[in-house]
Length: 376
Image (tube, rainbow, N blue to C red; front, side, top):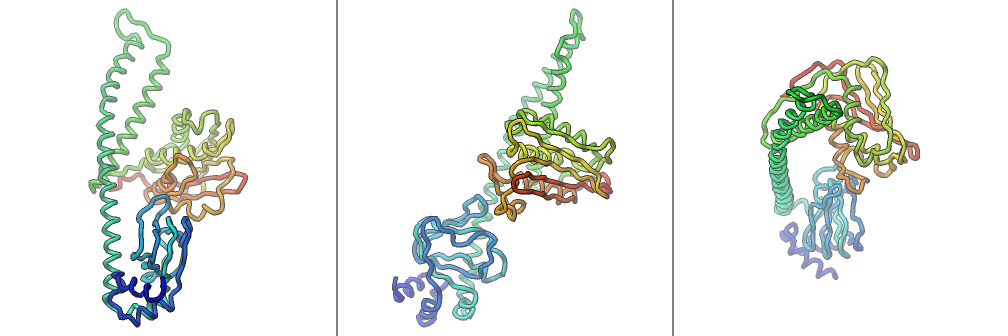
């Protein structure tokens, strides 16, 4: 594309069609043309370049984390937010076909384009359209999630009938009726029953919380003083048949006496489940995982420690900031959930220590001075 073709092309871009030919000649002459091959990255999320790009030909995709959020082609532009606010890029961009771009940096934009109010208005329209599109997608996804949670809740209703039948069966196993004798296996059956009912109640509570959040209903978030060693033991017992933990040992390391912090047990159990399962993913067969509980000043510190290979340096900056995963069947949401539960809902701290080749310890604290509360 020669200079005249570029100028004619730019006249059809909504951002630039207000400018006279002389101004567009300056843009074409002074701004750099960039060529990208298929698969080549233009910029990464979190990078700090202050430049926008006009697509002269080709196609680019915009992604955040592992999710594609937009596809852009010739005549469209991107990166304009970096000219409005000096913040890291909010998404990553790469070419899906060989592409040619015109780069306009902050200095060039201010020198040639910023004086035209109509161009700024066009940029605002583009930004507004993208925000509206993102909002529509978010609302649609939230509605689908709400419907899914509602349907899952309904599908758990038969468990109530099963509970009644099991209670009647327990009476028979106990030999409560005439001509009945106590049966072997009663204790094991009651233990399994308690596990099933506990899981049912936890799932129902999580579904109700999810539906309340979608409906903007303020529900109580009740914190009670809990025995964390017992909570860890229950969690470990419930995870015994998980595919990532079978054949592996989980050791609980706790002193004889520990204070009982105020917390919401269901959510703390979710944190422990996520961390222990993650540790199982990197632990070799017949290997061991250690869960440590220690009183540290005015907090209780819980650590889940593995002896895996450690966390690669290149992903550490993103680990607790976005939905990043290295597991084939993972979605990267587990650690973000843990961080939110501990830091936002319990005013604790969530972090990790890792050493390449030696393993990782994910740690969190719960304040000991916090009183049992009911948070709206």
